[in-house]
Image (tube, rainbow, N blue to C red; front, side):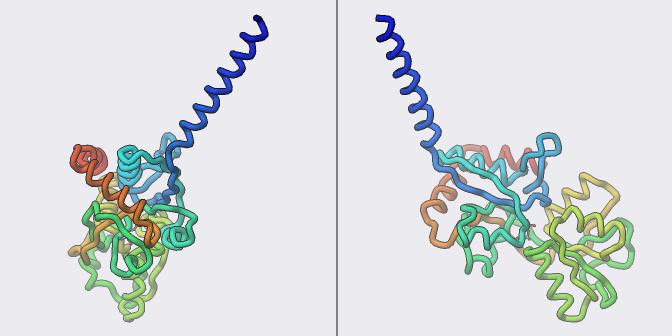
Length: 252
Ligand code: GLN
C-alpha cells in the first residue's frame, strides 16, 4: 500500500512537470531587436537595466494580443536589417522609417508613428538657424544606418559640409554636439525633442522638418505569417485603447 502511494506520487509529479513544460512551450518565441539610444522609442531602463520604451511596450502588447512571446536583443542600428535578413532575429522594433529603400530588403507592418528629420545644434548657437546655414568647414553627425546619416553623407558628397561624422549611439552624438566635436546633428524630431525636454538648455532644433518618415515594424521579406500577426495585433491594440495608453505614457 505504501509503495503504491509512493508510485502514485511519483507519477503525479511527473505528469505535473510534463504539463508545466508543455505549457511553457505552447507559445512561439520571436526574437526582436532594437538599438537602445533612441528614447522614448528605444532605451534602457535606468533602474532595471532592461530594454524599454514605446517600441518595447507596443510590441509586448501586440505579442500578448496575438499569443506569442518576445526575446529582446539590442544591436547597432546599422546591423538590424542584415540580422533580419540572415534570420538571426525575427522582428525589428526600433523606430525604423519604413522607407522605399528598406522596403526592397524587408517587409514592414502598418506604420505606427509619423516622424521626420531635424537639424539640432548646441543650445545658444546663433550661426546655424537651418540646414542652409551649414558650411563646408562644418562637421555634422548622424547615427549609423539611419536616414539622418544618409542625409549627412549626402551633404558631404555635395561639398556642403566638411565631414559626416557617423555615430554608433545617439547618446554619444548628443554629447559631441554639446562639446563642440560636431556643429550639428541630424536626427528624428520626436527623439531630439524628448532629449531637449529631458535635458533643458543643452541642444536645440533649428529650421523646418526636413522630410516625412513613418515608423514600421520590420520582418524578413515574405514572412507573411508573422507580419499578419503583428498587423492584426496592432489593429486590436489601437481599437481597445492600449495603443493610446502607451502613447500617453511615453509622449505626453
Ligand atoms: N530616422 C531613423 C531611421 O533611419 C531613425 C532610426 C533610429 O535611430 N532608431 O529610420
